[in-house]
Length: 422
Image 1 (tube, helix red, strand yellow):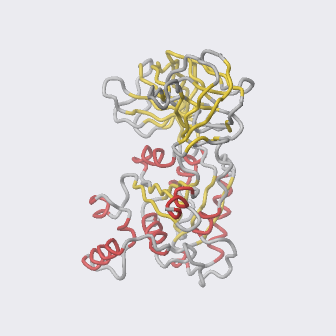
Image 2 (cartoon, one colour):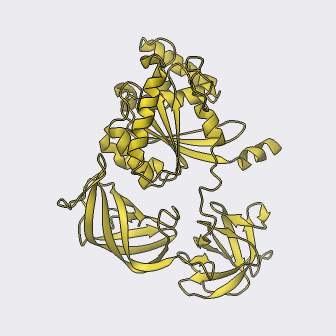
Image 3 (spheres, one colour):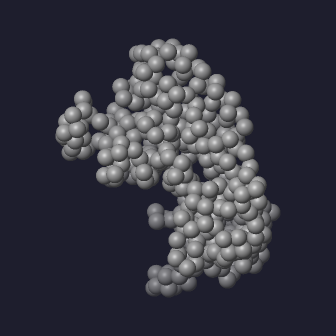
């Protein structure tokens, strides 16, 4: 039982992979799982059989993640594939996202919750258009850590010059973006060089292997622990014999650190109180921080409901109805200017109208497109909206939880856009 508890308490790193078609993303993930002993024997047998049937030498590790039959047949990734694995140091969730431009929305979906992005490049081709696009999306989504994996080093004879040239090219491009932490790793996913085990073919490289980086990258400060934000999802009132008067507010902490005794304010009412207790499934805790899910009780009886937010008195978010947001449009139907949509922000539901499209982004060269305001599938654009009720938000760059929204088509209930508040 203690082993299980230890596993549950381990730190979780979410990372996403991106790169051009055939750069070897699926092979890289397959190699990570294979070399870190995270594949079951029956999976291994199926891989061996499938690889033999296709007349391939050895095991085709890419088959591990390409779950859709269409992906296996074409040898490409179409949907976002999530894979879970763990080492003694950390648990991992991998979002394997497709490289094609028509699947930009899938990459945004996979990357939105990631702590780290692996950008894969082919050592023969270097920095290409897709690399720039994926780096831009990673910086737009404020992913704190990026690992640039220069793959297929075996095809350039493991030369240090090839690695250095790509490294300099990427640094020159990424200087225009906001990426706080970049690492570079030369590797060969096919042969396992520098993925889990150090490469004997590249003794000139003195940095970490990919797995060592993933296990040790510091993610404790990725969450905003300064601004206290607690969007209320549900009011807990058991009214049982054991808890006749219990009234708690359940939700996931979106920022900051809360402790019993802290003075807090409730939005939108502005009423203040003190935290009486912070309860979890395992009992009461002395402090809670993002991204913990907890139930808070307050010393005063205040009318609080879903969509309200508990914050600190002297540190409250912005409260406005007019917002500027960067969106990625995810629907086949084009966006309607002056159109009405449902909006979800933290635990709050409202409706909004699209006031105007300011510009679209050309994500290949980072230029603004101001003469074409029609927003369609996979477009990234800056728009301004007005909501029916005030939202309590921070800028996305300050807090990814309180700075993100989704838009929903009221007629079909489809999610049509994901947005970052500027």
